[in-house]
Image (cartoon, rainbow, N blue to C red; front, side, top):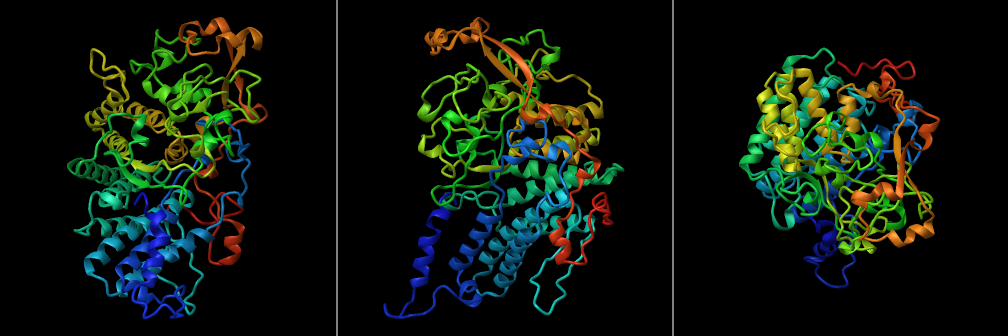
Amino acid sequence: MKKINYILTIVWCMLLCTNCSGVLDKNDLGSMSDKVVYDNAQFALMVLDNLHRDMVPGWDAGNAENCDEAGPDRVPRYPWGQAGSDDFGSLKDTYANIRKINMFLENLAAGSIDQKEKDLYSAQALVIRAWTYFDLVRKYGGVPMILNVQGMSDDLLTPRSKTSECIRSVVQDLDDAIAVEEFPYTWSGNNAGRLSKAAALALKGRVLLYWASPQFNPGNDPDRWTQAYNANKDAKEKLEANGYGLFGDFYRLWFEEMNKEVVFVKRYQEPNLGHSWEAGTRQPARSTGMDGWNKPTWQLAKAFPMITGEPVTESAQYDDVFFWKNRDPRFAQTIAWNSCNWAQYDNIEERLWTYPPEPCANPSSTHLYCRKAINPASTEYQAYTGRNSVDWIEIRFAEVLMNFAECAAELDKNDEAYAVLKDIRKRAGIIAGTNGLYGLKANLPKAEMTRAILFERQIEFAFENKRLWDLRRRRMLQELNGMRREGRLAILKMTEDEFAAYKNLETDFENQYNQYFTDEIEIAGEDKVNVLNFPEKYYFYPLHSDDLVTNSKLEQTKGWDNGTFDPLQ
């Protein structure tokens, strides 16, 4: 699967040439009938691979700046409460993709390929459709549920379904995929990375966790939490029984591709399918063609606990000058700061400098940088825009555990929640302590245990496109209102010429940093003139005016432009 996009064009051409009666035949090979495609397993698989390539989620740096995770380097309107109803995108492209999935499922069923292959292909397509609808529902609530191919004689003006109906449909697609006996828990060889039964189980757990969370469940219906708990427990146990688990190295889990923690993944192989994560996330002096993404806030940096698992606010070990010392190892594996040793291309050791004037055109507004998923073995060539091939892990086993723990906590099953948190922190490298709780407080009541899990998610999944969604589904966005995101500015105590002699790996910045720098906390970027402001209506997004004009049966979401659609039904 890693190379499926690389070979797709070659295979397509080879297959099209099969059974040609002569080199002078002039058949229009670019307009094959559905019968020809779906009577041939290889052709049908190529259609499925295109669906996977185009619709499975991949690298997305945008959401980090829409909450407290990253500084406002690209001046987003959303976190300042300035987004209007046309700022959330149109449904048009997503429903074009849904139509492709529906066409694939219907044509596959009518084709004459082997039934086992039909079942395997349809199971994967059902997971893609479930993901696509789930992504819509977590944004908008109920949306039009179109599960078959609409013809020209059909009524194309489909109203929004109730959110509850959408969730049932998504879960049904996943259940249908899971029920396919031959659908494997994992794929191997060239198929590694295909959607699997493990991915379907994990996604079902996530869907039902959202459905039980306060965004969709403000009345806290315990039956929803029970359903979510059962689904996530089932996913956890079946994945463990089939070889999934926590990978031993938190930092390298992105670079040891298809390790045992990878559950739901989009694979990349440039030059045919690459991404710009490294080019946009590295410091500008070490990126080419793009920069300005994923700049950690000082609030995020302070959130990482100590090596003992204690919060920095409660630890005698924390030193605000040498703030990186004695921290949870995930801190230095996620965040880079002035003077830190940051391995760059081909493991060449060098230091990061962020003191002004930083030698680049567009420095980080927080003066901190993200190094998660930045491969130290990358070459400078691979850091060009669109040239990187590190896989995106949409769901890793750590999330399956955390989803299970959150549901357990909501049902007062604290022993199970503690067990997960201890496993996560043990893998991270936090010290167990004399009580074996890895810095967790004993006997946490439900509300505090839930908070502990959400805190752990913030740290474990930093810059993995989880934080904003967690804040939305837990209805915690308003807790950030009034915040101004901060950075940590290093100020050189001497001239640049005087400092030049010390800018080497031999200087002991680990213990002598304050001889060369003094640090100040400052407001980041445009937050100097804006504060975070998340209105209540942000929990369910509005429909774009183009969609409302195109489909007169669509209702606008309540809270937006006199909307009447209730997303809580």
